[in-house]
Image (cartoon, rainbow, N blue to C red; front, side, top):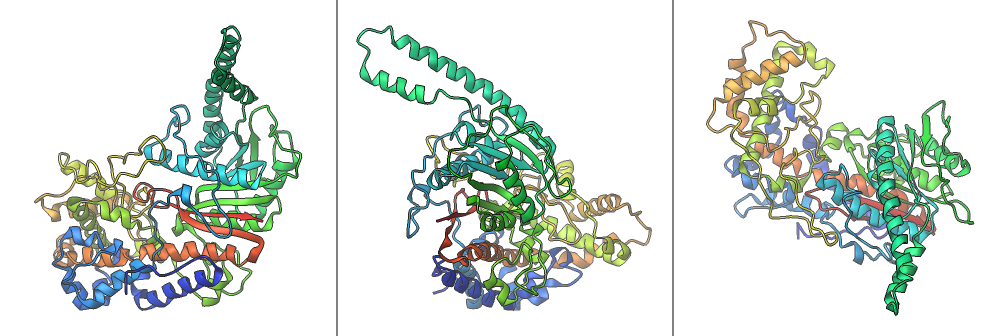
Length: 585
């Protein structure tokens, strides 16, 4: 029955079967995959959809449209439409947060001795609720794998401001090297690390003082001496992350960096890797502590962007010193992709031989679509949904203006920025369209509950506004932006267009008939919601095929390693929540 998940990923054969099922299903809907919603009016995109579907959804409530990407159907809809929605749901990877303490995968337990504890206020300096949620879960997973495999050092790839690296060091007591392309991020990481060092050093001094006082307590209870032993065992030199500024442009870069960091004990140095790609390395005066065994590494990446996640997987396979990898990808729109010509290509998609053999090519529009979050669509209320669809109408109508009166601008594919949000805030400052709270708060990761932030991000699934790009599906900004309630839509469209022209450096010509464009497009504006909802339903499946391609890439290595794919974050709070975890035997 459509809608029931029936696919497995335990073996390479099962994963490839799942991938082929997706490819076979999406073939007839290539018109959705290749579409640019900004061209909704210019290309009359609604005409490519089954007329029975459009006629049905045209009168559907906004609330029901927002549920389509989550696989929710209504009884009155055509059978073929219900089959489309339910089949997509059955093909998409289930992304509700897993119970990490119960993750078992034959032949062994992948996350043994996983300890999930709340982060203290010192470690969470600068973190928002989303980041706290992610770091708390991911640090526990990385720590579990690192101790199980017995690695000496963790490399945090794309470390940003060092949140993960600092928690792994100070809370989980693991040596970490934080690698990021931005030197400013490295400076912030080092500054925060110094503040944390002072806090933990003071805490250790107080602990030693407390131990000394126990000696003077007559008939001191035995359990206090046990506590003393625990405190003494932790009385050590603090482990702090080392930061490296390095642009990881290829597998060779990351391999060379890994080898260099393991072989060189001087932490104040200049590294020259691939003609200066690696700029500098900085860290505390203490050496990274290695055991007597051969050096070994774990690569960890929280939302390593685009090809970087794939580079981590390749480095894991090609570098003997890398024993494990924990990768959570994002920004599929930035993946490199080329027509598959041979199995030696080093692009971000596809990476597995199985997917390469199918000849599948997604294209940028499909990779953009893979960033959609069904969970965030589902959590939007009616006003926020209307707001999103109306902004699509403005942007698509503005595309008609450019197409008709400024065709030369389309060849340059510039971006016009966040016009919709600015206009709504300016003209309707007192009306908000987001939910103050959600009924779907994430479950507690430890003794603390994660609460949802009060503002809702855009529906692109990344939590960031991509703006209104002329060559992409121009998504609206935050659903908390102000909404039209009985206002003059043409007036707003006119202001939207003037602002867009200014952003592009184009002068408003006297023969530009904005009124005519709006009158021509407005009768079809109500079709944008149904069209975009049907198209967004493909997003989770497209993300699934990208993730399964990476899993299959690892599974194709045979019995040399163990690999799993599990959702470790609450998806509404962090839509890109699927971790690829692999370790060598």
